[in-house]
Image 1 (cartoon, protein in one colour):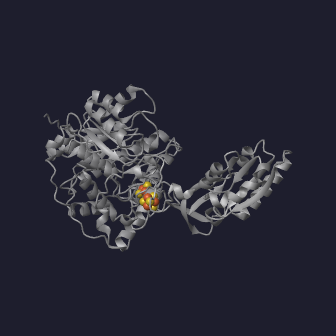
Image 2: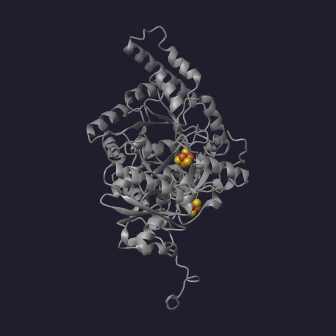
Length: 341
Length: 228
Ligand code: SF4
Ligand code: SF4
């Protein structure tokens, strides 16, 4: 932790159009109407089977307002987020396309966005991207032509000014995309994190989705700073939550995932869930853990609804998509409202 | 300075296949300071090559030389006289040195004995760290004197990413997060406000992305008629 004091900061006045006018996606309409939104996440397959995408999409259908489609997540090659997003859209789930600065320069980004828009995709999440050294092509050249702030600025200019990054006009006018970024409340320097969120808003983010939150105390403090700066009035903040699968997973996340904190109390609670169940009874233990993980997640969502400045939850249950529905249901988030144009 | 390290001996040996006699040429500047291609390294590498190729039964004779700055033709000129007897030159200069020799002595094969790594700084004895990628448009005035292009694994321009943890970069547990350091420096200098300004997309045309780079300074250039 830094010993130096960060200066006070207030979000500058925004001259952005009202949220409802920026984009015509379902997610935009709900955010504009101040509904507590629910987003989910879909990891495309490490192959070309459309049915895999459809299956996952069907599990999310009706439980979320829109779902992120990851872009070569963890720097592992997977089906393109735009292609998987289209398949998902055809199943009735609105996609939020993720795109990283790691794999594309500004030409490729803009070209793919034109294509995605032409296909009907309306929500975008702009990311730096995990470094390729962690993925399955560590020898790849990374791009980082733009960083995530510059990416946000570019897309917001493509919408508001109808111009490419170079300043030339986009034929047919601007891309009316809802533009989001990521926020990690628990990364370091801790004091910087609310400022970074503010900066994403200044760069043009309509919304942010946060990293998975387990440490409610820390998160409350972060949100207080964010709200005090006036960020939540301009940027819709969707909080990442996700069910833990086991005590081991909780510990792994605490100890091994950079930028992730899991409080000891949560780990103890997960461990306690299998008290009295023989270690040999693997299926029984797993079921008990999963039930507890879902329960914690539901309680967390209920707590989140009481925190000022939160626009919704992003339920991340990668490779456990069937957990999303019971969580949303028990948290009182179903049925999802549909807002027609 | 330019920081380099020696290639593995076996790789160098395989480059020398078919050579009977080579001239190993070190450089007295950057690669001497980083213990990769100075007089001493030329001596050790030459001896290793003689011994190792002898053991293999296909001995390569290695003579040794050193020039003060291999990247400038005038320093290399004295080598020319004796070059006839060599099948190749083995350069222990940086990539620029190797190319200077190759350009100057086009009839000779010039082989690289080093891997040129980066423009860097000796962090401690025996440790060198990259400091600059020659992006052609320096931003150090905006970043507290710390280069985000070469020292941030993602070359970010707008603050530390979500992977920065306890001052360490997400990419490698032994590397400091450049943006953490920049944050600290900007705070110390009372310049944190600058960190809140969205730095626009960089124009990479001044970097290698713009094609092969060259600087022409008419004020110091020698006119053609005087060159003769
Ligand atoms: S900003 Fe560019 S010129 Fe300046 S130190 Fe970094 S790479 Fe070198
Ligand atoms: S952790 Fe720091 S140095 Fe590493 S990529 Fe992120 S901002 Fe750059």
